[in-house]
Image (tube, rainbow, N blue to C red; front, side, top):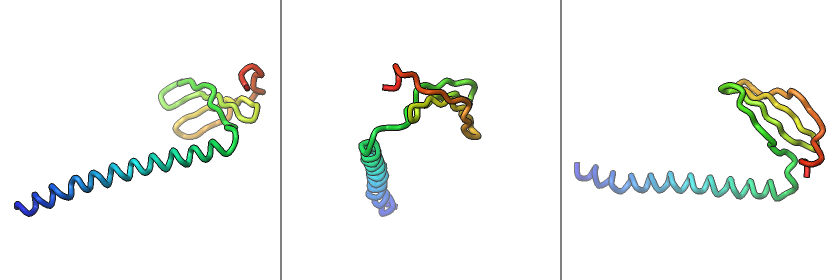
Length: 92
């Protein structure tokens, strides 16, 4: 019984450290990759506004290549509802 408790006392902190280290490494790698993608050029897609219509249903306006696109978002997918030129005052 004492041997079991000693093994548990040694391996449990080791397992916790491995879990914490893998989570830290994942977050570090994701931020490095996101920085490389964003630094490679200007962002072409910008979320302008979202509005919650019902639980699980949203409306979103995104700006993409000087166009504003109205999207309907649900748990089942995404649908383009409308598209218009971006207003000149906001597309800077």
